[in-house]
Image (cartoon, rainbow, N blue to C red):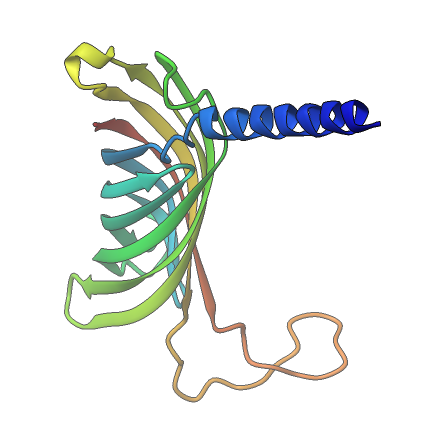
Length: 214
């Protein structure tokens, strides 16, 4: 009986020692990959400011810091605002926008892949300054939403893992439309009650450009 008890204790001790050894030998978790990202792009779409809503073109730039699948970015955009050429009124101006956004990668090829494919979504906010050609400015905050893809190449580890590629996306800015003096509540279609026009301006761009990072 004594020998049987001693054998059982020895077996339990051996199992516990093996479990402890396995736990001690487990590799530590890898830290989330980190990277800097810069990009320069071209904007083509439609910019809205009150009843001014025409074709718009411009340039965009951004810089960000990525941890894992999340990137915090600073943004700067310059684009035209104005009536289309076939409209009677010819109001034109230039918009400058500065903002910040958080980007999340829904699916990507991973931090160690040589070929980069990254599908992402982005949300943030900014501030628009629109200067009209013949005088006057419009300043307002806005919200931003974007979806896009990055395609590129990553160098080997001996060269510091530099990345270079291009991107394309759709971006939308939503800002409050300026109030119109003396505007009346109306029914522009079948309705149960009259209202003034919506006070939201929707600016939409297709963006295409190059990006690089480390």
